[in-house]
Amino acid sequence: GLSGRFFVTTLPTIYHANDGVFRRYRGSQSLQDLQGYILERKWEAVEPVAGWKSPSSIMMHGMAGLFHFSGWIRQIHNYLTGTLGVHVWISYAIFILATLLIGLFLGL
Image 1 (tube, one colour):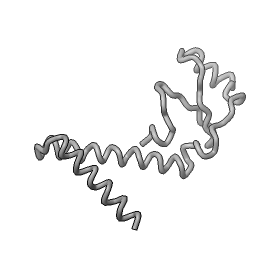
Image 2 (image 1 turned 90 degrees about the vertical axis):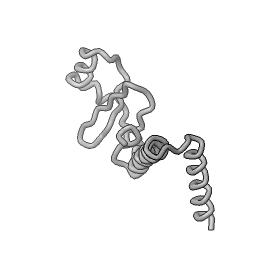
Image 3 (image 1 turned 180 degrees about the vertical axis):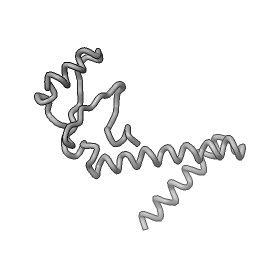
């Protein structure tokens, strides 16, 4: 969920947060450079993350929900294949059928 909320696309990703304003740190990963970034207030020169990409925005809240939903789907798949012993391709077919049915229902 946090990966979705903070829109983490590469690792490591470091954010500086101050008074609800988020800035992405793109400097060196050494401890001295990171400490200098904070203590020398170099973060003030960095442009804050756009409002729609802010972790507190409704868009990133929805993105975090999608990440949770994908984890839930993975748990269902593991339950079907591991606990119930359903073949992997049958599990995929169940998800395909569910996706089609939901799409048809929403389309109506």
